[in-house]
Structures are given as C-alpha cells and as structure tokens.
Image: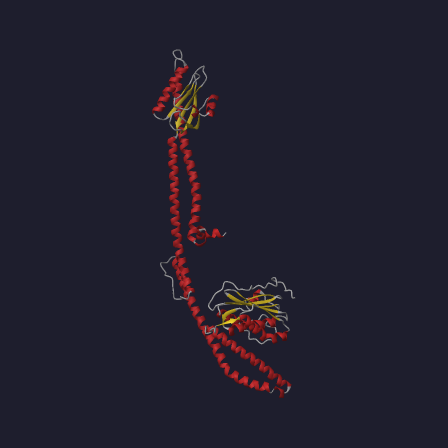
Length: 520
C-alpha cells in the first residue's frame, strides 16, 4: 500500500478538495456524455441510413415500374423478352450512372447484365434467394466491391423483379452507394466527440473555479484559526459583501473576539490564583515556623506529660510535618504555574541515582513488608536535574509501596541513544483506565476513603509530571484493577533533546491486560 500512497493522484485525492470535486464531476460528466452521445449517434445513424434506404427503395420502385410498363408495352413478335429486358436494364443503368445514383444489375437466363468492373459478390446470396422466392421489394446493406483498382465502399442493395408474360421473373438489383451518408455519420461522430471534449474541459475549469471560490473563505478561516492558535488574537478576517462568505468572516471574527476575551479572563484568573497560592504559602511560613518551634518543644517534653497530652503532642508534630510538606509543594506548584521553574542540569548516572533512592525508601518498604528489586545496567547517564529526578523516583516508589499490597516491586532502568526510562512496577490494587487519566490531577485520590499510612499532600504526582515536562520528557502510567500499575519516566539523554519512543514498554510484560500477575 505504500506505493499507492506515493502515487501523486492518490495524494492529491486525499489532500485536495477541488481535485476530488473536479474528478467526480468529470467522471459523472463522462458517464452522462457517453450515454447521451451513444443515443444521439445511434439515432443519427438510424435516421440517415433509414432515410437513404427509403429514398433508394422509392427510386428503385419508380425505375422498375417504368421498366415494367415498357416491358408490358413491348411487341414480343418483333423482339425477344431477353433482348427487351437487356435494353431496358442498360437504359436504366445508363440513367443511374449518369446521375451517379445507382448501379443496375439484371439476371437473365442468358447472362448477368451488370457493369464489367462490379464484383458479383457485391450482391448478397440471401437477397438473391429472397427475390427468387416471390414478388416484392427487398433491401440490405452491402459492401460494393470492384474488380479494378477502385477501393470497396459501403452500399445498399435494393432487389425486386420484372414480370414478363409466360416467363419466369427477372431479378433486378439496384446498388446504391452510401459513402456520402457514412461520411456524414463520421462528421457527426467527430463533432460529437469534439463537443464532448470541449464540454468536459469547460466543466472541469468551471467546477475548479467554483470550488476555489467556495473554498477561499474556508481557507481564509483556516488560516485565521491557525493564527489564533499561534497566539495572534488580534488578527481578523476581512468582511467583504453581504453573502454567506461575509457571514462566515463575521462569525469567525466574533468567535475570535469572544475567544480573546475568555482567554484574557482566564489569564487574569490564573494570575490571581497563582499570586494567591504564592502569597498564602509565603505568608504561612512565619506562623508555621513559630508553631513548629512550639511543637518541637512539646514533642521533646512529651515524656513528662500525661498520656492524652503526650499523644496530642505526637499528632501535632506529625501534622506539622505534613503541613510543611504541603506548603513546600504549593510553592513548587506556584513556580510551575508562573513559569519560574528552572533546571540545574548535570550529567547523572540514573542507575546509581535509582539505587540510592531505593536505599532511602528501604526502611519504609521494610515496614510494609515489601521487597524492592532493581533491574538496571551498570551505568545509564543523562543530563538531568538530579534533585527533581530524585523527587520523581521517590514519589513513585512511596506510592508503589503504599498501594502495592505488600507484593514485590521491581524498578527498571533502560536507555538507548536518545532517551533513558525509569519504570516502577507494582502488583497492588492497580488503576482502571479512567483512573489512569486522573492520577496526575492535583489533590486527586483513587480511593478517598482509603487510610494513608505514608504522609502525602496529593500534589506529588502533579509535581512529578511537571518535573518530567520540564526535562522535555514524559511521565506515563499503565494500570489494571487487581493487576497493579506501572509508572514510566522517560527523559532525553541530552538536555533539550527529543526522542521518538521510550526504551522501556509501558504495558508490562509479566501480565496480560485484565489478568492478575503470577508471582514467583
């Protein structure tokens, strides 16, 4: 099929609406013209040939009647029937040849009276038998052949007979040339074909011009939409006239104005929201520091408190930690929203980085009874911000431990010439396809009723996604309920680079879709 895709007409058919309109119009016109042309040519041929036949039959009848009168008036005592018929045939042939109208052939028992140059095969055997079988007049088309150098030509044979008293009928054949009629038909055919070709060319040009005129406002609207999508919100289409094209331009301009207004409102709202989050986060730092200091004093002296007060001091310390983490995440989100986040790039061995993060979360995995396994090459280097990549990996690992249902977790690190991938595979509660589309939303939780044992703010995956995008990479997820999940981070080898595909597949190889994996 690739060679078909390279075929220029097929590419034009797929990409050009005027080309499709012209081709369809020409196809339909050819079918219509072929049908009408065939009908016209058939009717013309029938009319011309039938007219020639009727005229020839009338001429032959008139000549035969005159010959029959002369034959009836002949005194057979002074001459024989054969001599008289021969004389009448030669007189009729002389009149026909003089007017270049017909050739007369008469069959007598003695001889065939005909021009010397005429081939006897000109008269078909079927019409000879018809004349010999009874009285009447018959006609049939034929090909007039000559024994000299003259070429054959189309003709018409009209056959009848002369009656002499006491004698057998004498067949008489009138041969009319139809070359002029055939030439007329050829001229009609050529004129019809030329008219059809000119009509097709005219239709093609007319349809193309009409389609271009119709498509011009559509293309203008497309260009205007592209300019709007590129951020040129002040561009407008020219409104000319009062027809449908002008209405389209007016509607497009109105849509652009409303779109620009809505975008400006959303931008203002986003700025207000970003400023609010940033201001609140910064303003809360001071009271949080004071509360943190007081909380640490209480937590340090909890041993001297009664059990209820001591437990309160522990809860206060834990919630202060979570509150401080939330403020930190909000500040990070506000920097992403404001476009102020920057990378501190360095060439990092990601295999070593993942190993260090696995060691960091090993105590947490031990609390959950989860086994961590690393599948990575000896070295896999890339230009990244190690702090942000560590944050992504740590977030994926803690989520996998919390939702992994105490089953083994495997971390894969792979690289190719363009990119490096880090995949975290767990076999826990998993995700549905609908949940996979929401997992990176801010403050979203798959099961709000689920009790969290690992402190979290609900912004971890959102920040991880922004960190991945900041690197020019991708953070993707695969999951099935009961079959676990796989999170895959892919970043380019070189800062600012691109990659066509990830070195590690997103769908895990240890399970089929919908199946619970088999554990070793």
